[in-house]
Length: 204
Image 1 (cartoon, rainbow, N blue to C red):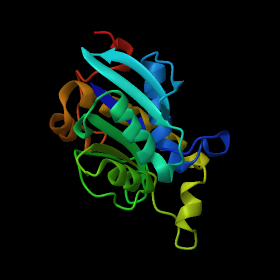
Image 2: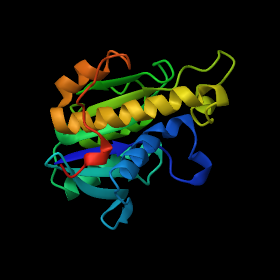
Image 3: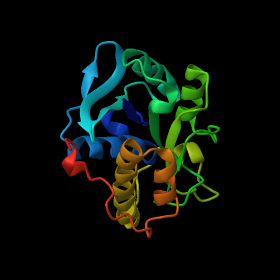
């Protein structure tokens, strides 16, 4: 079983914010795979379940706020009897340029509050994370305010490309594992990915 969790803040007021790009990617995956995300009675999450390339796949969005993401993720792993290495967390990253994505099998939080919470709750850093660059704010802009702001019109094309790349990266991780997927995606969008999986053939 594989579990993909997008990080963000619940509620319409946060829906288009930079901090919610993890939510956006998982929602995009759910649409492509035709998976309904529904409330789960045993964990504070929206959950959808499907099969992709003969792998059981769970898509999830925590209903806790970003800083408490670990509570939802811990409950999710317990519910599905999954281990931390079976988890992929999709989140925003201030230190990556806008639209750049980077997959890692483990590591520190790098200050991302949702990742901090997950590490604290799971007691390990050994879970996969896909970081999506949202860029750094200008020196005069407070970082906390910046991550809760929406993307500018001129940034939309880069954001849409990043969401598409990130969704493909997630499905490659399910099918091919973290090492092969890192070699394909961490180099940037120019790498030839012919033959990589598509959301449209989720039952194959």
